[in-house]
Length: 223
Ligand code: CTP
Ligand code: CA
Image (cartoon, rainbow, N blue to C red; front, side, top):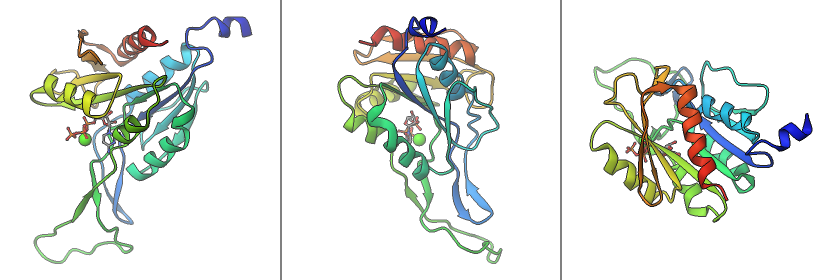
């Protein structure tokens, strides 16, 4: 059995995957979240494990069940996710940031449930740390860092901009314009850009198949 494991293409490699949404607390009973189901990230984590990698999946709140063959860390907020990523990033060879991390969180979290009073309520929000950017800025040359870009317009330019700005090796563009692609579906349609800004366009597929495509591209750029 050991020799079978050792023959797998990612045997001996450590991988980290983020998945799902983050929840940013408003008060003890409310939060700001998003529609991410976690399906894409869980599928990628599964595929990396199948290819022999030692996988840690850092997941926001989802209903997904993970495979026995990977280590799972459950987190709630963007801050929790950042701390978990920071704790293991230096040891991993491959990082894939699939999570839909909140860009803003309430500046203060009310310790009591906010009561309804006036007709209008304003919440003050502050920016969260961009986890992917911060990992990109401390990445070593032998580490592979993959980001996602979720766009609704001018998709390719925004995706290429994120690849460069965040110092990524690959970016996976997910266009919400493609029906059957995105948050709650079981299918996805992606385009991948590499560092040379070369584009590979994939057909609409199940998220399991999309995960295989992404991992195949990663295998090709691994040293
Ligand atoms: N990301 C992250 N931490 C954040 C926000 C985003 O790690 N606080 C990561 C996501 O996991 C994804 C990538 O950054 O891999 C791009 O996320 P996206 O929301 O598409 O882009 P942003 O840079 O947040 O820009 P915007 O939402 O304004 O398009
Ligand atoms: Ca964002």
